Image 1: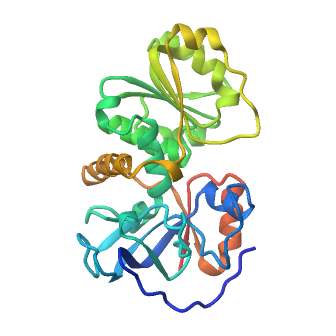
Image 2: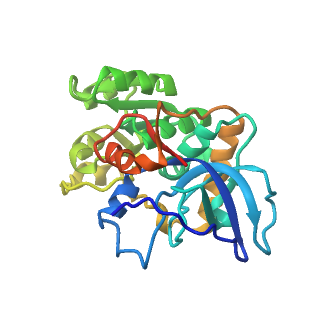
Image 3: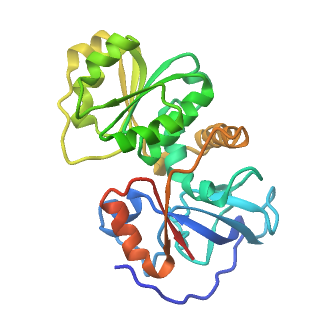
Length: 309
């Protein structure tokens, strides 16, 4: 379904911004959309990819707070919009265009978007939600897990994470995790309870596989925030969750309110300015290799896949 074509450069309409893209970030939701797993087929053509970084090239009527030539990062560019970031130019609503601080690279900017905002949402949307708390991040070497570790540490949380290999463990430790556990080699619940006691919040990538572990380690009024869909249907252990007065919260960025996005962006931008966020290891692909780039993400590439127009 992916085809490299020449399109006329679109002009921004009222409330829109045109961005010259330097790097386009690929997320699992991008290949899932291509595969028809996230909704209906596009009407006509669809330039894919939600995330990216670049410079403002043109501004439509009514847009304030942005200037031509300004470095920016984008999020959810292709959500209800024909022009995603997998192109030389993207035209997107101004609300989806965020100034990129001078201390941040374009690579970091292209990595943010869906992963960083999802991480902030799963952590409660504000640093105060996890400050002084203990957080368990499942899959700490993934894009969401990476930013969840960094945002939680920036907020003052104690962070535990799980990984499936030593190489991924090194990535999680580099992100700042206090305790890294290989779930293939040790009893995660036993280690957590012995090391830190109960946890206050879980950022969960695989609820079906991990719900029993989560139920064993959560403390009173804990939140299990789930951001990824999976084929395995979870069996919910009612009694331990009820005893803890725990909540299971689902995170889908497409339906987050504008007010909530302001909170998420405020936290994310503050962390960027404080040099608290970093890019994952980057795999670069040319735009002509977009098929290979999406397949790499579909096959579970470690780090972040970027497409360069």
